[in-house]
Amino acid sequence: MSFWDVQRDPWFSEFSRLQRNMSNVLSYLNDSEAKSGNPALGRSRLFPPMNVRKQDNNYQITAEIPGVNADEIDLTVQGDTLTIRGERKTDTVGENASYHRRERSFGAFQRSITLPEKVDADRIGANYKNGVLLINLPLDEATGPRKIAVTNE
Image (cartoon, rainbow, N blue to C red; front, top):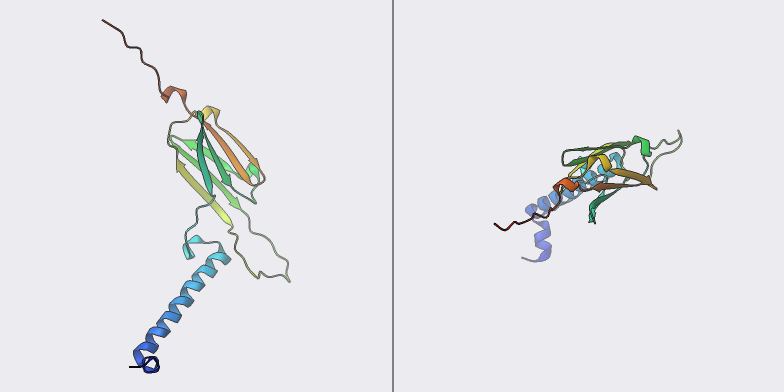
């Protein structure tokens, strides 16, 4: 059977049509995610993106939260869990304007992470500058390593 015969086969045309339809569906889902900001309609995204690093006796967390004012960020620590909450407001466009492409997500967000060690909640500090939240989490010294004296009997 030659290549041209395969293309005329009814099964081949059905599979070809199915492939086109699946490609259209996947493309639609990715475009819908970009337009709506809903990660459920496409690949999942964690927001805000974070880096967590340990430096000396502190954990430092940086989180990118552009488009939100510092006083609109809710930062809580409960037990060993740090939670960041907030909301990015939708851009307003004029009556005669429309989007050509819309990729930025809007709406309420919440992200919680489990801290690897116990921190001193009373000494936690946070600073927000240029859309980046920097959180300093000092380790709780009571749970740190302690030297134990060994006595000789």
